[in-house]
Length: 365
Image 1: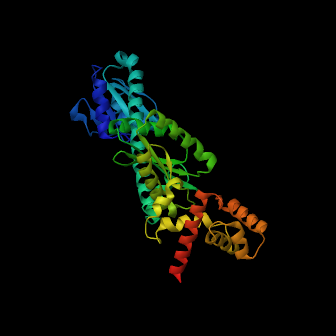
Image 2: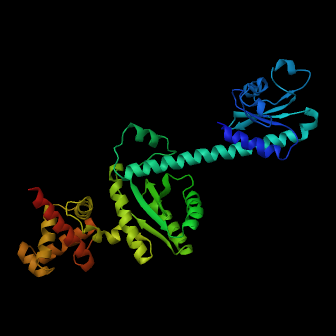
Image 3: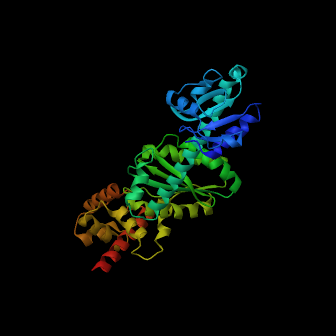
């Protein structure tokens, strides 16, 4: 787990402070770096013993014959998660170095731990970015992608939601946003990372309202500190295959967030995404979401209500039902869809959904 570069850094940094030669050795006994360049890539028999026993080995004139090709000194294990990832050796008289040996070992382990953690974190970030890009661009969930997903520290469970964040201050974003994400999403089942230029992504999993609300609240609070921070929230979807829709929705919301300088939900600007061919994914998702709970009779009532220009009396006559019955049906539609046909702004959305559904049905015939 120790790279040659890390071993050279450890030797360089340690020897700046000590007047002794330092060796950094792999668990297999190969000297990776040393102040004595002639010893690099040689086998260190003492390091093999340290790796096997996880114990410090002092080599002196009394036992040096047991460890060919070694020199007197102290050899100590470099531990990471209870495993020996390398051996640090200090060449010289052990009596002169006993006081500093433990400090050298501790310093080396800290350097190794930090480098290993950073390496793992960098790999995880790249893996997150790969998974996100593949999913939001509709890549097939093949064996390679599935294997990468399985290496995540959590399960990708529905529902899902994409949030996009941008900040014009490039240097500030580079130094601040990743740390903000790290603190905000600590030990949460969330993918977050750098998307493009000054844009960052957040993929919420298992994002019920109770789970997503604190995230949205934290983002709003961060925007108060950084007015130029723009946030677009995509729609919630139930399947990984629908992530391109959530991603495109977040992109649409982000465009309006930049214009209005406020956190923007896709649902609030969804109407504007419909200025596309009526068979687009956004159009179909829109009317299906709005009308999905309505049966044929309720759809007929709604369409008739619009045809009668929202006139209750006229519509009741047209349907040959009592006005109270019509009011009951309209109230039921409100309960099922969340939109009130008798309220202007809700009526606009319901009318558009009905129209788009009709057009799509006619095209299919």
